[in-house]
Length: 441
Image (cartoon, rainbow, N blue to C red; front, side, top):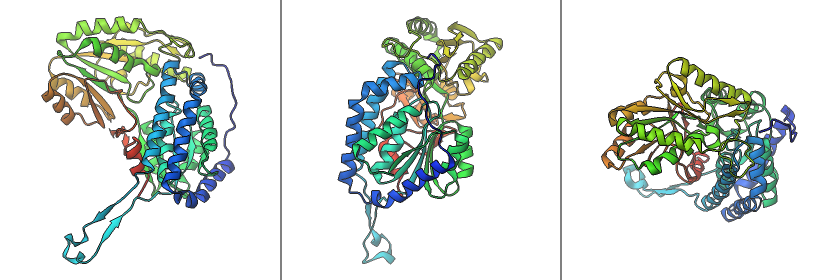
């Protein structure tokens, strides 16, 4: 928030990174054979210790990520649950029998398969959820018997280091979990190309994801690569529920959420009323110091990102868009911004903003709205407010995304559901059970 330095963290050298990979590689044989009940107990310990240090960790997230206090506390709570889910999954790693005699050549035979851990997992994570997006990689990896080397975002390393302390205190053996801090161009690349790495789990931008794919070689890869999420508001929507939810979905964590609401398609019959209420609700948001308990919108992660967002808004205005509220920047603070009169080809519509800005677009038919949501290179999640089941199922069938939320926005997620995108939004799925499957063979 202030831009002042409050901690220093050593950047990992090539030698340090190699030592972390070697430690994980050497720890794998023993950890992979650790009984499920012990892995359950250790992950349960992690969950409990996180809960005990909830306010301390929330403060760290506030200070290093600029996330408002209520969302920082919420992230810790979610992480507690994610590790609890991971502990439970440690007891459910199983295979199946195969009816070999379904083939004439298989008569008299019995077959079965088991899920087995892969080895060392490389986890490369972003700044916007420095605890829970890490948990979605660390928890499942440890649950199934993999070891892990984590590279957190360079802007938010302290949360990951605190997590490492907790994992050690929980009783996880040395070498099983390792943290190295540094840039993607150095540490990230070393964790991508090293032949001792068996699996890469990455959350970040499509260009970086593509670079990783090109350099990874024959490794399993899971990627979550963002979105420019859309939500549709039909005339039968409950506006008293939809408006505040859409406002929160647009501006929580300063819009720096992969499934943040960026494109709002509102039927012309309710557009005027919806827009009026939306602007009124946005005016109520408190912008400022994220450590203040009543703060709604804190700073963006870096000033250059706030500058970029401001420039996108100015460019949209030059091209004919109108700002109903916001549009101004103070250092790292980008005020919540609502745009109308937008066009599909504007950056604020067709690219991922990752900023506190949302565009409202009026439509005439539901089919048009669905087509406009689908008209995106991304495909992570979308939302539809309607009480018409046929329309809901039409949207589910026609919008090529990882998840369509009915009577909610694109931002809805609980941590045990399958989560991941299509098109440029990624490869594979997270959500504890599904990540466990991605991290085994």
